[in-house]
Length: 221
Image (cartoon, rainbow, N blue to C red):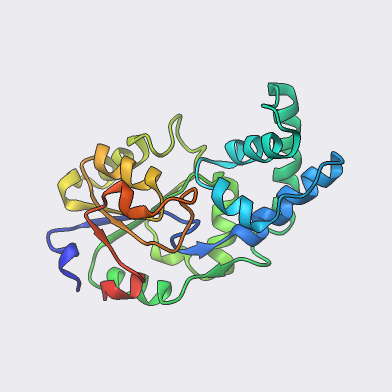
């Protein structure tokens, strides 16, 4: 096993941009929502930079881009509901698992590590996506962005996971693709590991100063 796992008992994974490339499906739902409102579609390239803070923030960014102004709460509520409905119809049609993800998860689980999932995606979408790609059995517990009152970069979801399994923070590792994952991990006292291929608002992940960067999760095994 990789040296970064020395002394680690629990590994928390992000989902979008770390294990799966979900932007194609997210962008399709965003664009349908925009077109319904007679606004120009955004496309996958822009949506890729908007992902990471939960679905409501994604839609706020999409509306701000399409209209040139910050949406009021009523407009945002309606657009967000529409997006969720569209995304629910096809949450994994175009989504793909990144290379060597399953190999890494299988090896880590075989080594007896506790694997958990902490994502800012609404929890209702997590199980269907994990099931579609045969990823569900690797994880002991999953949290979505609406599972608790706080979501990443707040450390609360990570602290919740550590407490659930009775593992101190220094024996936990956060693996993600964004500054929100790295900040949450550091604030929770976790070791942090980043991948550079995901969604980080157009910023290089090295700027978030993770403890380690790997090009592929396959490097862990």
